[in-house]
Amino acid sequence: MPRVVLPADRTAVMGVLNVTPDSFADGGLHQGVDAALARARTLIAEGADVIDVGGESTRPGAEPVPAEVEQARVVPVIAALRAETDLPLSVDTTKASVAADALAAGADIVNDVSAGRFDPAMLALVATRGAGLVLMHMQGIPATMQEAPAYGDVVTEVVTFLGERAAAARAAGVPAADVWVDPGIGFGKRTEHNLALLARLDRLVALGFPVVVGASRKGFLGALTGAPVGDRLPASLAAAVLAAAHGARVVRVHDVGATRHALAVADALTRAGRTRG
Ligand code: HH2
Image (tube, rainbow, N blue to C red; front, side, top):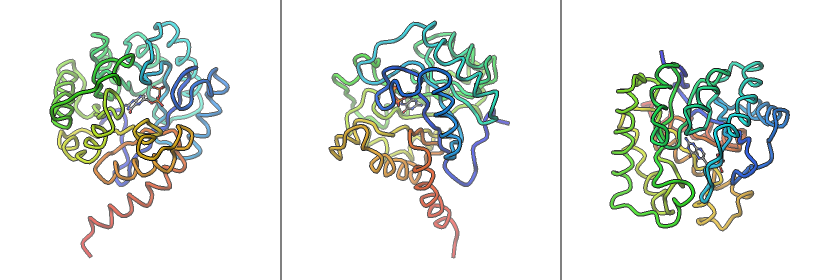
């Protein structure tokens, strides 16, 4: 059995809970255990399948924070959430020490935007603890990744990278059933790279792992619509629906309720298309 079982007949929604002062969309809004719990209760009431707790912004230009700071932000929130819900919880971190404490506090999944590259202890830790693992593609590091993203063939490069990282996770002892992969929308990518990855998500799906897509409120949606970050819900819903239609099993979003409604329609249409009338 995988550590976290995804719904078979609909796209799962991972609700974003950033407990940082500087995240690009919700920085400073949910700091401290009380504010974070209040936000988590809303995400749960709106139908989140997973809550993703992050204590370090990875927005373009962000600098890393020390492990102790990140730990102090996320661990009390995960412990408090675990005390009141059985919902799967993930910790959005690239540091094995933060992941270890978050898992001990009750997290089920490590969401590592470096795919286990920034901390050599990460994959073995996830294996030892029997946790789920999200492996995400990023070109470069957050501080500089949007300065000059460049690819020969972005889809092939991302698919090859994630295949290699999944093999590394399996070699470290993580069961295949616990691995999810994510193309890393906006992580060292121009608008055309993000669009190519979304349009050819089928090639990532073909790796055989559940695919996670996090497009919510991101910069390429602003580039396409002209909308500022707080006004990107319609664009985010379009991206979530099309990601689901192209095979994503999980969408990572800030606006859970609206996304669940949009996906209820998209998933029903997908199911109808599979049924021979
Ligand atoms: N995007 C962000 C952070 N973590 N994890 C996965 N698996 N996929 C993503 O696309 C992804 C992610 C960036 O979004 P957010 O958490 O809202 O912002 P910030 O990094 O500024 O905290």
